[in-house]
Length: 171
Image 1 (cartoon, helix red, strand yellow):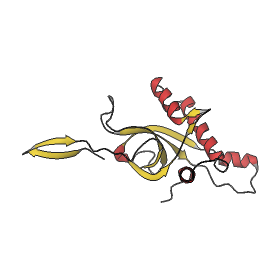
Image 2 (image 1 turned 180 degrees about the vertical axis):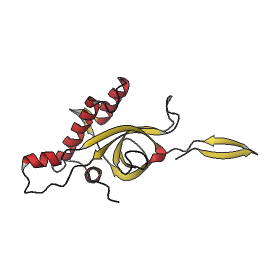
Image 3 (image 1 turned 45 degrees about the horizontal axis):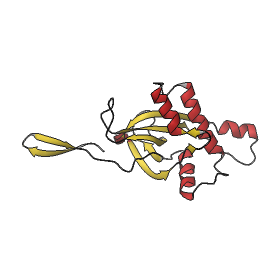
Image 4 (image 1 turned 90 degrees about the vertical axis):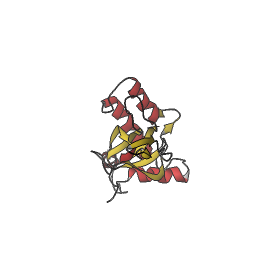
């Protein structure tokens, strides 16, 4: 949400910060503006008060640009692998360009690391989010979660969030 302008005198306004407590790490959001408009993403890290280089409330999101396609029982392993490929993206997004959903996703893996760790390492190393290693690591993480959806022992809430995240938004 944008900052609210509160009148304090004639032609003078005072800014009041509006907090967005809904958008937290792991929340599934839909992007509303830009190249990835209509795409779903997961919030990796939220900056409610902005940062030194971005003075507005924003967050880092990781999402899917090209979604996995439908798979049937009659398909062989090679075709399933090809249809399961997806194209991820990672970017900074202003809160005003996000629509939060009711779904949550958990990309925290104990033995393999987490999505947050991959993105924070890229930020520390001043790597671009479009860098092959960064996007490759995110793609691998998304693919593992997608493949292990049926066998995963997740809470029902997280499982529905994952199935929603991997399905293309129909509009």
